[in-house]
Image 1 (tube, rainbow, N blue to C red):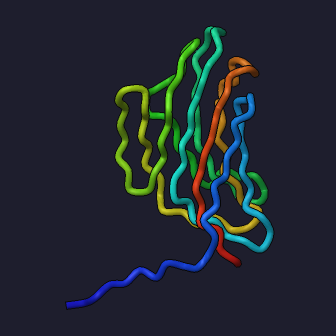
Image 2 (cartoon, one colour; image 1 turned 90 degrees about the vertical axis):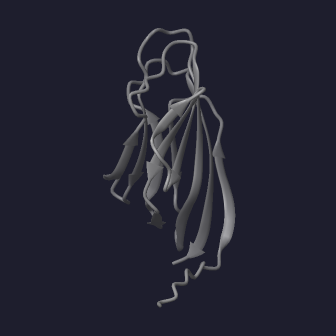
Length: 140
């Protein structure tokens, strides 16, 4: 029988958030740090402007190249709506009662990399994407 152990690195649990108006949010890993993504909560509130919104979660390297992307599963935001996206490691794809769960891989991002949550359709500049995210911030 083999015993397995996970060593949890020392670091700071840090809540990152942005609740300002806009359809694109970017969170950049600071110099000398790494982020282990624990959870992300995304709330999308749309205006009365008609159009189909498509919300994507992207991980980008320091050159802004997309290295991972997840899109809401066959769920598009419509006018005057509200929908919550919950990306999580080990989660299942699902949609129920105004919430969409999205699987994301266990992720460690290094300094200069970022997380971008964006409505790629950009239907109305007054749409609001609120993001709360918990990361374990560890030294490089």
